[in-house]
Amino acid sequence: MEALIWTTGLLAVAIPDPSLPSVVDLCVFKAIGFSGCPGCGLGHAMGYLFRAEWALSLDSHWFSPVVLILLLAHIGRLLRSALPTSP
Image (cartoon, rainbow, N blue to C red; front, top):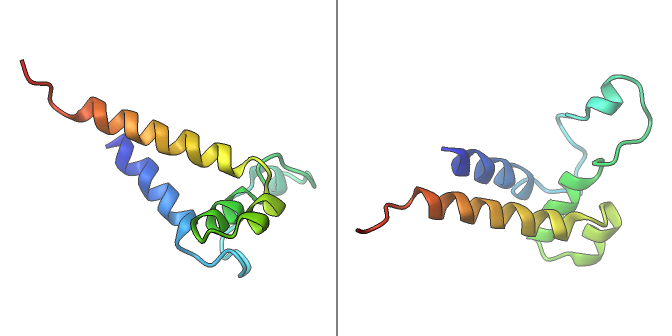
């Protein structure tokens, strides 16, 4: 179930066109009045990564390739642990 949730979240940032303005802003920092956030731009950066627009991705958030690798590795571990082991 957790793998499904992470995969759905990853697809939620991969499918929309990152060059369009966001419909929903989930930034807690902006909601409480801070101007900067360490994660701002990460969703757009991930969208650019899935479209193989590397420069735009890194311009949006320099940490996006690392986050993508970590998320894919985590989803892979979850899926492997969910598979039945043969005796």
